[in-house]
Length: 316
Image (tube, rainbow, N blue to C red; front, side, top):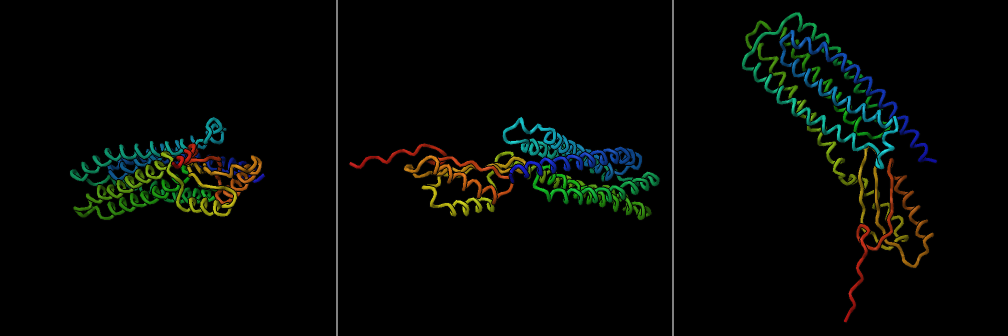
C-alpha cells in the first residue's frame, strides 16, 4: 500500500516539476532575445558573455523539461531502471556545451580587453532595466525550485537549482558592471570595467559546467551509494544476523531519485524454501523503509556476488 502511495506521489511530483521547468524555459527564452539585441547595440562584452551563458541555460532547461515530460508521459516504463540515466546524460551534454562556449566567450573578452571602448548609453540603460528584472525573476524561480526539490531528490531539479542560483548571481554581476561603467564613464580606465566583469561571468560559467558534469558523471557510471546509506545497509543486516549464514557482497546503483540495491546472502541449507523466503521479505521490507525510493533484491548464494563457492579440498 505504501509503495502504491509513493508511486502516485512520485507521478504527481514529476508533473509539478515538469510544469515548473517548462515555465522557466518559456521565461528564459522570452528574456534571451532582448538580451541578445541589447548586447549587440550596447557593445558590452559582459552582455555578450551573459547571452551565450543564457543560451546554454536554455539548452539545459530544455533537456531537463524533455526528460521530465517523457517521465510524465510514461516513457520511463520502456526502461527497467527508469529514465534516471537520461537525466544524467542531459547534464553531461549541457556541461560539455558550456565548456565549448567558453572558448568563444573567452576570445571575445580578450579581444575587448585589448580593444576597449565605451558602451552605447541608451542601449546600456535599457540593458540595466532588463538585467534588474532578470535578477528578480531568476531569484523567484530559484526559490520555487528549492521548494519543489524538497519533495524528493532529482538530478534534474538539483541541476536547475544550481543553474538558477548561479544565473541570479551572474545577472547581478552584469547589472553592477553596467551601472559602474555608466557612472564612471568619464574616467579613462572605465573602458576596462566591462571586459573585467566578463571574466567574473566566465568564472561562474566554468564553475557551472564543472559542477554539472561532476554531479552527473558518478551516477552515470554507477558509482556505489553514499557511505551513510552503506551504514544503513550494514545496520539493517546486523538486525537480522541470525537469519542468514554469510554475507557475500552488495551492489548498488542510482537512477534519478531511485536507488537499486542487490544483496548476496548465504542461508542455512537445511532451512525450508518458505523460511528463507520469509527472511528475505523481512530484510527487504526493513531496508526499503530505511532508504526511501529504494528497491532491494536479495539473492541467496554460496559465493561472492552470486558465484558458486568452491568446496574445500580434501585433507590427505
